[in-house]
Length: 232
Image (cartoon, rainbow, N blue to C red; front, side, top):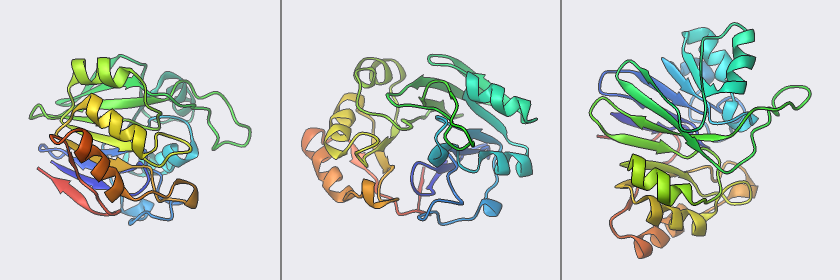
């Protein structure tokens, strides 16, 4: 398995069976992106919600690669009308693509489609739990504040091994709340995301790592630069 951070909340995951999964592909307007849209290939694109910095270049990439788009029901209707292959889901539901189980979980955020001319309803924001072929579980939190499901649902029921958590503050959790989330979720590894894309969400990930270490020494914070990968 290879997990590459593309800046902001965008990740490219290649599984052991070479399924290519792209999450929240905000690339062309992302000043921290290390790649161009044309360089990315995907079999599956996961979209956590309708904001332009997460929906990003979903349509361009899916149109070129033929990727199936996994998203909430409302976004799937919008995309299906434009001719894209979608897999619509809702909170608590699961689906399988090849040998990968995808579960949509709650997040605490808004989700209106702000990338179209007139902002329109975009359903609920979400996070995803991916259960890979080898049984390893990845939690991508999407945009979210801290909420009790992290402690009582995501940790107890899904037990992720790896968690991508936002730390930017203002629009999501900040480092303090994300450190509490790390204690609640208790994964082996955390990869911080959604920070340092713009001045409004500037953070020092080393300070976040120190907070996590003080509250839960069993969690390792892996700090990636855009373009860096974590491999297992």
